[in-house]
Image (cartoon, rainbow, N blue to C red; front, side, top):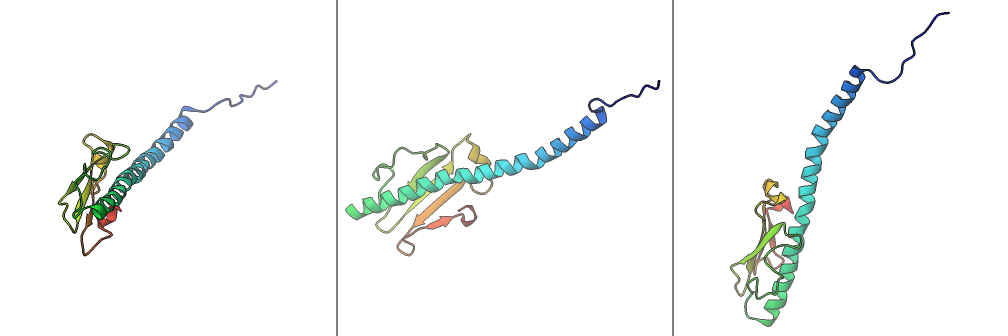
Length: 136
């Protein structure tokens, strides 16, 4: 009677190849996922800036100038999710600049080129100029 050896399980080489392939996929997938997440989190800034723009128009309808952050009744100084600090500079009778800056120590500080988003409203651009354009 001849005895034959049957294969049961995986060899170390097969296991190492599988681990190597999984590692290479992770090297590509994780940075891509992180970038997509940062881009999606910008919606927090967009939402806050556009909400603030509406509050400014409401304030301006009842006053001779645009208002400060406190005058517009904007709730606090941060965005809804706390990822951005919100400020208003230069409120005049014809315009203002609303800025969302990535909160110190937050995940958006790594959003290259898009850590500060602005909406500049003026008589020439009543709908506002959004900058940097690539981030909107």
